[in-house]
Amino acid sequence: MTSIEKTEERVTLSNNDDESGDRPDSETPGMNQKVQVPGVTARVPTSLGNGVMSTGAIVMNGPHTFVLDFIQQMGAPTHLVRRVVLPHEVMPKLIQALTQNLSNYEGQFGPPMKLPKPSPSGKRPSVQELYDQMKIDENEFGGHFAEGVMIRHSAADFCFDFVTQFFPNAAVSSRIFMSAPHVPPLLEALKVNYDKFKNPNPGTDD
Image (cartoon, rainbow, N blue to C red; front, side, top):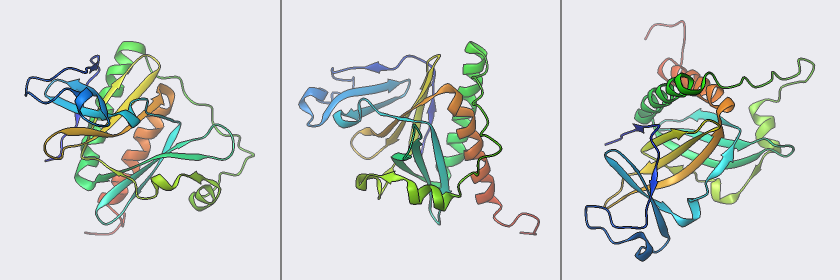
C-alpha cells in the first residue's frame, strides 16, 4: 500500500531501538539513522544520510511510473543528482502532501522568494538538448524506486525523504534537499505532468 506522510515536525534521528524491538541501527550493516514522524519509521542508509542538493526537477511519465530527475544547475554542465521512480498512484499523494507543506511553510515564514526569470534574449534549451549536455552518473541510469515520501522544511530548505516499504523495514531510498524558492516550480511541474497523464489528449472526448 502506498502512503505519503506530510509533516513539518522536527525529525528525530536515532541510533537506538524502536519500540518494535528491532536491532539498533549500529548493528545493521549500512544503516546508522532512523527518520521518524508520527506513525512512520524509516531507516536511513549511511550513504544517503547527507542527501543531495537539487535546484529543480524534470518530470516524465511512462506506462507504469513517473520519473523525477532531480538536477543541479550551478554552472555548466547540469548534473543529474538523483533519479526517483514513483508508481502512478503515488503522484497525486505527493502533490497533495507538497501542496499542504508549502501552504504551512507560507503560513509560518511567508511565500518563498521568487526565482529570477530567465533572460528573454536567451534561448531556452529543449529537453533533448538539456540531456545531451547533462552529466549523469551511471548509478542513476536505473533510478531509485519509492512508494512514498516524507516532507519537512526549515525556513530555508525543504527535505524530501523518498521511502520504500519492503518487509521488514521501511527505508529511505533517496534524500533530496531543495531551497524554498525552488519548491513552487517543482510543485507546478508535478501538477502539469500529472494533468497531462490524466488527459493525454486534451480537447478530445474520452
